[in-house]
Length: 404
Ligand SMILES: Cc1cc2nc3c(=O)[nH]c(=O)nc-3n(C[C@H](O)[C@H](O)[C@H](O)COP(=O)(O)O)c2cc1C
Image 1 (tube, helix red, strand yellow):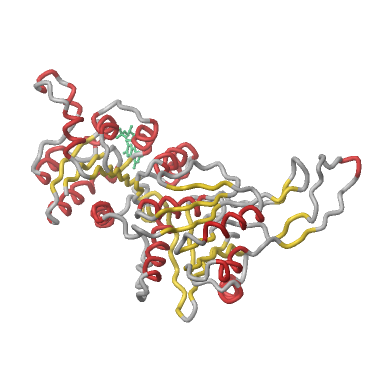
Image 2: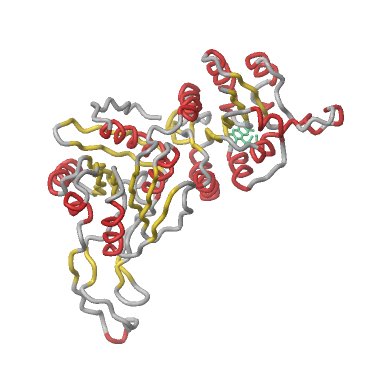
C-alpha cells in the first residue's frame, strides 16, 4: 500500500517516525508531508531517512520546483492519506477545506481514504469548535483514529492522547482490506423522540444522537448498507448513510418496522420516549388556565416487537441507566428478547448523553459481560461493530476490550 503520512505540529509528532518505521517494516511505501509547525517537533531528516523519500514541505511552492504540481502528484500517488498527529488547527483546516499549505492542499486533491489521528489536550479536544470540525470530517467519511485517554504532555492523564502508532498502522491497513460488513444491511436508530403536548411543547430526553450517528459512520465505513432512523438531532448525515428522520416514538416504530425487514442487524441506540401524552392539544396550552392535567400512555416497545416483525435479525438494544446497571440490562436482555444489550451509566457526566465519549458494558445471554472502556464514541462504535460482526459470523467473540 502507498501511504502518505501528514504530520502536523503537536508534541505527538515525535511518534510519527515510529509510524513510518512500522509501515515500512510491513512492506508499505511511505511518503511524508510536514506542516510548518511540525518541524519544531520532529526533523524532516528523520522522516526522510525512515521513509526513504524527500519530505514534502512548503518548498513545493518554490520556483525551482520544475513546475511540478507536487500536491497533485502526491495525492495521486497515495492509496491512503493519514494525518498523525492531527492538531486542532489542521483538523479545522481540513474541515473547512482550506488549502493554505502542502498538507491541506493535498488533502483537497486526494480522492482516497483520509484518516486523522488527533492529539491535543482534553480541553482542546472537548471544545465545541473542535468537535464541530470532527463531526464535519466524520460526516464526509474521514476515519477518526483516537484520540484516547492516556498520559498527555501536560503530565495529566486525560482524553486527547494520540492513538498508539500500532493502532494507527492497524487502522491504515484496515482501510485497504475493504469493509468487513460489505453486503450486510444494518439498521440503526439514534437520538431522542419528541412527544408533543401542544404545538410548541414536547416530552423528550437529553439524547444527542452522537452514539447512534457514530455507529452509522462506522457501519457505513465498513461497507454496510446503513439505514439510520433519527429522532430530532442537529447532526449532519454521515456519508453513505440512508437517513430517515422521525419525531415521535410512534413514527420511529413505524419506520423501524418497515425497514427491519431489509436488515440483518438492528441497533436501537435511540433514547425512545417510554410514555407519550394520551392527547395533544391542538392549540398552545395557556398559562392562565393553570397547570394542565396530563395523562400519559406507553409508547410501542420497538425492540420487543422486532422479534415478531423481523425474527431473523440480530437485535441490539441500549440501556441508559442511572442505577442498577447490570440488573436492568439483564432484565432488558430477557424482556426485550435482544441478543445484546449495551448498557451505559447516564448519571456520569463524563459519558453518555451529549458527551463525546462513552464507556459501556455489553450483556449477552449466557456469556460474561464485556466492558468497553472510556473512549471516543466513534471508537466505542467500532468495538461494538467488531462484536456484532462476530455474532453475525456465529463465532465466539474475542473482543479486545483493552481500549483504543
Ligand atoms: C510545545 C507546543 C505543543 C503543542 N502541542 C499541540 C498539540 O498537541 N495539539 C495541538 O492541536 N496543537 C498543539 N500545539 C499548537 C500547534 O502547534 C499550533 O496550533 C500550530 O499552529 C499547528 O499548526 P499545524 O496544524 O499547521 O501544524 C502546540 C504548540 C506548542 C508550542
